[in-house]
Image (cartoon, rainbow, N blue to C red):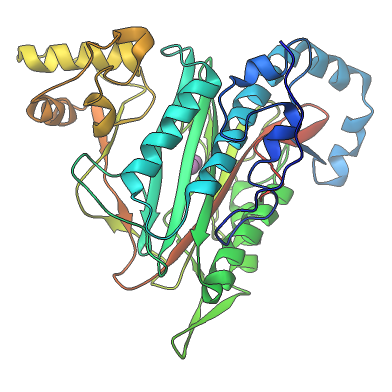
Length: 403
Ligand code: CO
Ligand code: CO
């Protein structure tokens, strides 16, 4: 099938990103995307991310080393999976840029975004799909907010919204986030986390020390300040939020990347995948859990607990079949397909499940991830990229012309 190549022309209607919101028409994608990304690249490699050398003199040998290059050739199937997932994430996020206007209802944005994600990746249960629920946290809420059904929150001219979503293929997750605002006064807040994330990514590489990367991020972040309604605020990193390694079907793969300087001497290693995400705040730079929970995840090391309640057993079976250890949200349980049409057809809807879900949380099988908030009245921003430490260079998989 031949796809018509177009010339990108649509600019994003919000601040915080650059580039064309319909960049993908140059690959033959339709203006409102409708073609699975795999069909756009039949017989062709998927687009590569941005390549950067591993920092440090001790890594200079890598770019030309014969053995390292051979190892990289042997891994090309893995890189192709990651690049396809990244291209899906990128196309879905550019489509999302076009939707982010004052007056948009967040639950509609999330549903359209997620349906597009399913379509472009070719949803296939745990083999291909959404990486985790769509975060659209507003203002002092930094992370882990997505609307539950019945929540009719609308984004307004005055809001600062963090869109954080992912795509996965064979459990390889691309985790990437940006911030949306409409008023110029918020630009320093957005720029602080965008530049801090870029600085953190530049400082990352094989043998980089996690606590030192945190120091680099903190220094960039704290070089910004913001004036809001006549008052000047220092911009602070949110010190108890972190980036993370990503393992197959495990969004938090075991290592954390702090966004302030810490004594952690753990190093990054060859082959690892990381998401560096930084959060800037006009508040106290410290979050706690608050508000109604939407995000849940089966624990990767969940214990085998004998469940007494039939409803809990049934819900756990549904979670195992549909999501495995990937995060999910309440909205997905309440869809006719229960989160995956491939797995459940249109007979997957969970009803009156909240008691069972809470029971699974109490048993330590499922973890609840409630919204994470700074102080009321503050504003927070976030940018995040996923990269892989290949033997010769690192590849920033989720890089786009938008950020
Ligand atoms: Co992340
Ligand atoms: Co994220």
